[in-house]
Amino acid sequence: MKSYLTEEQIAQLPKNVHLYDWLPAKEVQSKVTACVLHGGEGTIQTASLTGKPFIGIGLQKEQEYNISCCVEYGNAIQIKKNKLKNQTVFQKNIEELLNNPIYEQQAKKLQQELKTIKGSFIAAKEIMEFLSV
Image 1 (cartoon, rainbow, N blue to C red):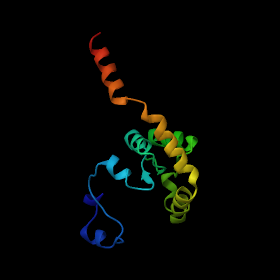
Image 2: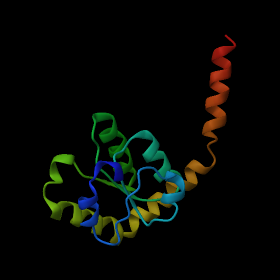
Image 3: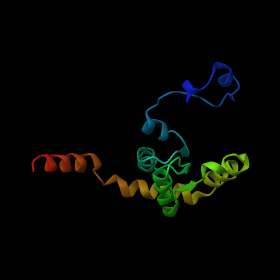
Image 4: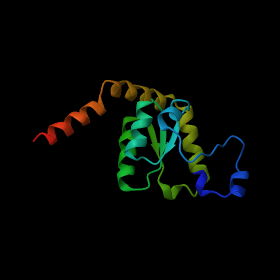
């Protein structure tokens, strides 16, 4: 996000807000309590693999669907992007996510369920089988 803001805008941010253009998502998510993300497959998987509950704000239908699956599982809260104009909506939801232990419990449960899946190995195996046909 840093590259999208002017120096003046960055100077107006609170001291506890740190902006960067790119960071290694898994390492960052392992250091936070919860996440706010757009709901793309990669961000959902990273949050799930690190056992972090999240607020999802989908920008497209696919992202909204991904988030809704996690809402159903119990490790996420979904906020529709058109509701963000009301700051109290975000504040209320972040407080819910941080103060209700069920979200973290479900995130940790999902993390354990996903630990046994060897996704990269399975993907490579499928590609190799496809190429050998």
